[in-house]
Length: 160
Length: 297
Image (cartoon, rainbow over all chains, first blue to last red):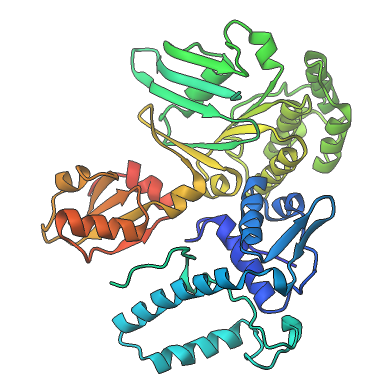
């Protein structure tokens, strides 16, 4: 899988790497069990510090999206490895931000939902309920990327 | 133990101008530190002091726990150095230059030297003066790293190179990092290079350390707040706030840099100066640099 990073972008490089891998997994371009480039190879390929790649991989592993097996490499996690509670919290925090932004700019809930459908199509995600691709046919929603909200927040933000 | 340990270092230029003032910097094994600052900010002086080429006027310098002034040979054998104005003997052949360096370093790794020479596609028989600037810099890099140093000091290593040669130089440095885990201190005016390579950033300004921070923290926990030219808040008031690193006046308005994430900056401004609606942006390295050292207008 090809990644591209842009120094000087608003996101730090490790987040750019995380975002692209997350998108690829969510969009099915990286399937469960598929092997990722080694940290060393990716550092050389992207010409970035090996510690930056390590940080991106460590974070993705903490989020349960990938797993590293000593001596074998790094792989996309099976669906079961994703902690659903953690993902939900992530999504909730993002949803709060999205809704408060929508409210501020006078965008209705229906319009936000329409927007989400558009984004889903853009990312090449199967419509929920179809269970296509690597989703496994059990209707489990794919783990979504957090990037539409710029930054994952572990704690929920107080409503203001 | 830290690879580099500078404590409260002062240094003067000839003529009594302060080149470094109370500078403390330490580098851990395997860390890549980008050193930035305007011309004359003290970057080269800092490198030379770290190498023991200059003694500090005040303060202490330790490399691998040793004093480079007392243990010059022992220390130099464990470091590599490349600078923009480094001059290799123009009349010598590449292989002779390499031989020369091999004879100086007991830990010289012939296999590594060969691999690099092959990758650079530089003929060992070529005379230095026939090489392009980029190729000459690559020979210098080869000579600086083939003894597998624990610390690599790169002073404007990409200065004067075209973008392709610069990238090639970075790629080689990354490979070396991967292979040997060498700690690197490099100075550069190319902030995108710093962003690619460095884990940590040290910014010098007028001989002082203005910023010493993990690069990602810098990207995520710094923000720029913008104030219109309506006099709602003064420059002095902003500068007095906790976390405010600098205020610049541009086209009548004020721009204040904070060591806080945008949301935190907004909150602080609301609580302290009662301005809740000043836009607070995350900011790239280049903009941060300009905000800190750029002029007022």
